[in-house]
Image (cartoon, rainbow, N blue to C red):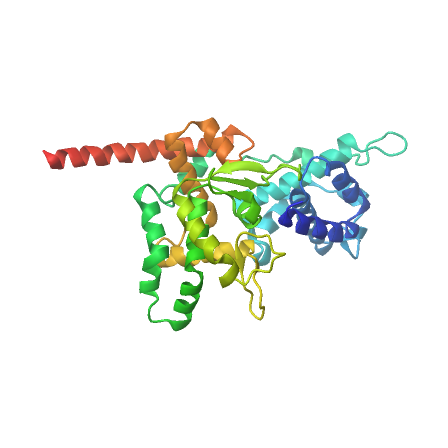
Length: 365
């Protein structure tokens, strides 16, 4: 099992006994089909909902585990509307429309299972009345809408090379007056450039990048092997190609990985960092990689760039040179519908490229 899944599985095992029995039953039902990470998301969503029920006086339970099934059965639409309002407005729990839709969808899955699939000893549904069946959940992110939100927020063509050049040289010039920043930069620049370049030339997700081990890389074949999101088979790693542009940076990082990051022999992780107070390097965390990308992006003048937008940048560029099915396979999308984001993005990119070529042609005349 990959490290993130193992961590989520441990947290799932810790949280599940604190849930009501009917939620434990639902999670057990879903366990063969979903990853620990997905199941943990369900648990977190239910925990938020049940705590809200208790706070609103809609349950007599003193703790989450004591929220009774009958109390779910007695809920009215006003209660669900109130929960939706809570998610969108309450300061500590304010969520985006996408997150609210996901949380409501999680509830609908639970209520559907309890009212349509699970039975009591007399073969009657566990939940006699399903209020969530009345809740319309609108799809909030069609590929075209997602593409529209991403326009102008990705690296295109020459910008990819410009950003890489900034990571390798420009940042050091800009931070020259800050001794602490320069020390960290000189120590980690080769690693950071390797990480950013690898995303921009493979399209890996940050979770896939974090889980890479040394023996997952085949430099000569330009292949890495990753656990793909959504696939529950932990015995198989999917081969994913990376571009030639990533090879040189990988070689540079690998040549100093052991010495600079004091890697113990037992440490298999590809990308390492030395935590404060530690003598040996250990696997970089997802947060550390996200933060290093943001650090360089802000200085580069594109503060909206994130790890995921670097992945989108690769995907848009890749789609211009390949078809939708090759792009879907490279990115590890479960459905080609998700990959259609890049069809919409590249329509605009190609139109802009044509405009640029027309302008250049007119200038030559």
